[in-house]
Amino acid sequence: QSFKLLGFLDVQSVPCARESVLYGSVGSLVVGLGYFLATSRVRRSCDFAVGGFICTTLGYWFYCRYNLAQQRIRQRMLKEAVRNKILYEGSHFDPARKQTGNERSDS
Amino acid sequence: MANHSQLGFQDASSPIMEELVEFHDHALMVALTICSLVLYLLTLMLMEKLSSNTVDAQEVELIWTILPAIVLILLALPSLQILYMMDEIDEPDLTLKAIGHQWYWSYEYTDFKDLSFDSYMIPTTDLPLGHFRLLEVDHRVVIPMESPIRMIITADDVLHSWAVPTLGVKTDAIPGRLNQTSFTTTRPGIFYGQCSEICGANHSFMPIVVESTPLTYFENWSSLISS
Figure (cartoon, chains in turn red, purple):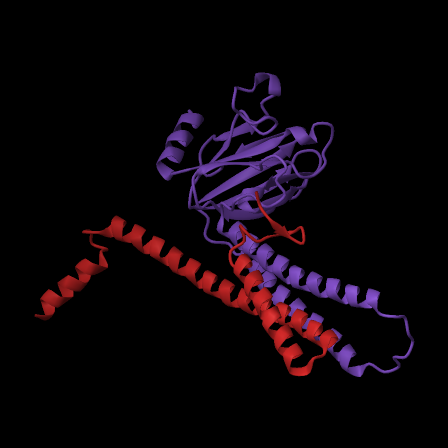
């Protein structure tokens, strides 16, 4: 059963969502509490807390999604490379065979 | 196909749909942060007394002009990237025509000689046990997996729409017009869709079933069905 934040964001199945919200909550607490301890202004501390939540959530979200996108690209390249290796191993198109052939001709 | 009471997307079976799901998640996260901010501001305003003391608010006006512009850019950039990605045409391996009729689809594999068939929904009374009601057809569209497929979609009578959610495809079938779309299936399987443009009494009863198989099986199927 999925848990949807504000009724629409499924934090369990969306990659990076759970971590973003958790880090956002921690960031909000840190910023809000820090400002309150420094200034003792309650109303403004709440404003900073909300601002901290939004900035930390979005900041971690973009960082995590960027890494995820890079990982997916690497996975696709690896999948293609494994498939090509299996397909071409031992054949004329095998790059490892060509390389060995070049080394032999050099020596 | 979708489960009962499913609200979210089906699992993606094509690279474009994967990108669309990623973008959807991104847009929802931006929406969550905006909703949190609006909720907070609403709560603040409900606790304040009404006053008309503010006459000049240059700073806050600057913020609430620039911030939404930034948010729109954050949404527009990936959106446009996917939009242009959807229009890319990768030398297709197979071209398929889908023609909408009242109330069935017909498919023509013009790359082959004499390979075309009609695809009617299997009525519930004739449905074997374990099959999906209102989704199964007598002849599925069989395509090779991991190959770019070009679909040319048109209609014979009224407007229809050829849609398969898991592939991220929805294209209108318009009489007298050929609409082109393309997709690549990333995995083997059976993918369901339904006509997505109101076309008469049996609009809900002309489903689409795409069967993605490895190339060997596709070749076997094409030789069997054309004979």
